[in-house]
Image 1 (cartoon, helix red, strand yellow):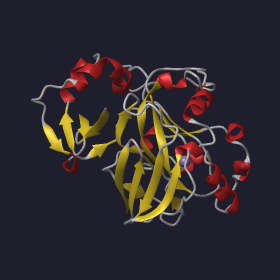
Image 2: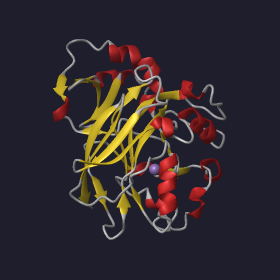
Image 3: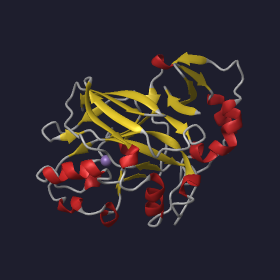
Length: 287
Ligand code: MN
């Protein structure tokens, strides 16, 4: 199942070029009062909503995909966890351009020694929303990544059981200003995390270990790789992350970008694709 959020936080199921508006299903979510529980309510509720989502009556409105405005398929993630250099060739690329990755000499180290980092949840947008460059004087790069959406709370889970806690996958863009500041600072600007175009549930994509992923800028391929070249696989990343903190429903795990990162400018059009998920076209503009 491909679950999207669109327009004014409507809920949709995507089939080819059509979106079924299943917003009414959200009425089955438990009513909430302040203080709200941590985690994303919809993602946490997916196992219970699944039957209702797939059995939506034939009377549900159907919209052309091209006419909806796609938002992030996760509205309220508690955190966005991200892996630094996690592809072998990107590691080599970073070594060659140490000046760009100023202050990050430790990039050469194994990811396990470097750890993971967090991006502000306020940086999150969906595929139909533009990336707005705030500091056009600074080099700002695209990074296409397989994004994992956590479905159930887990802590200290082993890699052998890690996939039991995954709700699904999406395409992630980890937009990054290069420079000496902390990663979380350079990567947390508003609109600098794109998640989309929808969430593909694990029953539709049970194995993410060998997916082609690519990113084009204005029709020119910049990044093209396969998730089989991840240094830490998805189960290993979940094991690693959850050995430090609990992962909650709706938490997003960006698995790292392959080689080919390069600058983006206002006016550019990014087209990102991952096998088994789909593709999305994202505009770049000045803030
Ligand atoms: Mn990244």
